[in-house]
Image (cartoon, rainbow over all chains, first blue to last red; front, side, top):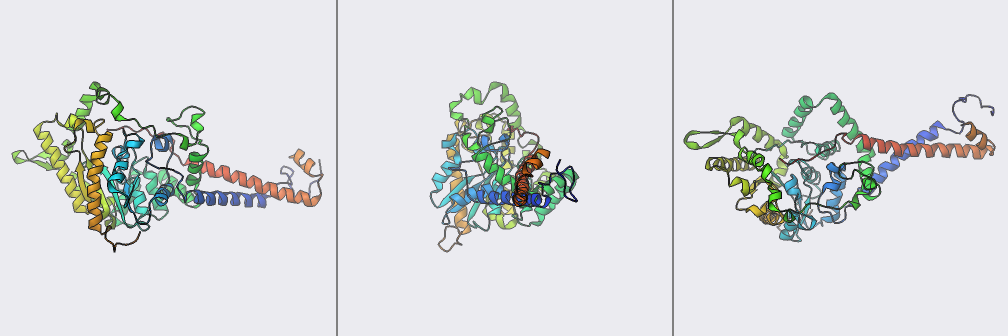
Length: 410
Length: 54
C-alpha cells in the first residue's frame, strides 16, 4: 500500500476531492435546471390536439405548466385570440378520434382569428388544467377566453381536484396565480382542514425544489422524446413501457364504430338511469304548487365556490358550459324530474352569471346519436357543441372588445 | 480504491491532481443527474390514477 499524505483518511481515495465533487454536484444540478428551462421553452408536442391517454396522468405522464404554456406560445400567433378549453372528459373529446375532436371543429368554426387549445382532462374540474394555464398566461395573452364544462351544482373546488391539483400548486409556487382573497381563503381552509402536515410539507418541499431545479420539465421532455421510465397501466409491458411517449398514438375510441347496444349496454342502463334521475335531486326540495326550490345550503355553498373559482378580473372572459345527459336517459324521466333538472340548469347558470362569468348549457335538442354514452358526445354531437360554443365565444370576444381594431395587442 | 490509487499513483503528480479533480467533478455531475431524476420520480403519485366516468 502506498504511503498516505498527512491528513488523508485510509478509507478514502486520495483521488476523491470533496470540493471538486461538490462543485460537480452543483454544476450538474444547475445544468439539469438550465436544460429543463431550455427544452420547455418551446413545445415538443408537434400537432398537439389534446392530452390523450398516453400523455396523461393515467399513463403517469403529468404535463407541466411550462410545457402547456409552450404549446400555446408555439402555436398562438400574436394576432389571434386565445381560446383555452378546460373541463372534463367530455370537453377532452372522449369517444372522438383524433381527426374528429370537437375542439378541431371549434377551431374550424372560429377561423384563423382564434387559436383553440384543448387542455381538458378526464375527471377534471372547470378549475383544473386549462384554467391554470389560462390564468398563468393572462398577461402574455390578454385577449383570451377560457371555456370549460361542468354540471349544475357539480364540484367547483377553487384549487382543483386530484390528480390535477399539482398544476395549481405548481403555478402558485411560481407566483403565476393571481392573489384573490376568496380563493386564497378557500385554499387556506383546504390546507388546514383537509391536508395532513406531511402532505403540506411534501407540496412545499416539492414545489420549492422544482421551482429551482425544474426536474418535472426535464424528465417529462426526456420521457416524451427519448425514453419513458415509469411503468403504467397504459403500457405495462416492455418494450412499450419505455417507448418515448411521442410514439404512443392518440388511440381514442370512436363512438361511431361501436354498436349502440354496446355503448348503452342493457346491464348498465338501470345504473345510468339512477344517476340521471338523481342528477339534481339532492339539491332541491319541492315547494308549493310543484315548484322546485334550491336548497339554501346548496345555493350558498355553490355561490361561494363559484365566486372563488376564478379571480374577478378573469371572470368576464370565462365561459362555463353546463353539460346535459343523453336524451336516451333524459327522455325516460318523469315530467317532475325533468322540470327539476331544468330549474337546476337555470339556477346554476344564474349563479355563474351573477358571479361575473358567461354561462350557458348545451345538449338541449341533441338526439340520441349525438351522445356516445350517458354524457360523452359522438363526433356529430361534438360538431353541434362546437357550433354553440363558437357563437358564444364570438359574442364574448365582441363584448370584451377583442375583435375591435383598437383592442389591446396580445 | 487501492487498485485505483495504485494505478493512478504511477502517473506524474500534476496529472494525478488534474485527474482527481476532473474525476470528482464528473462523479458529482453524474450523481446530480441521478438526484434530479430521483426528485422527479418521488414527486409522482404512488397510486395510479384510474379515471371512471360517473
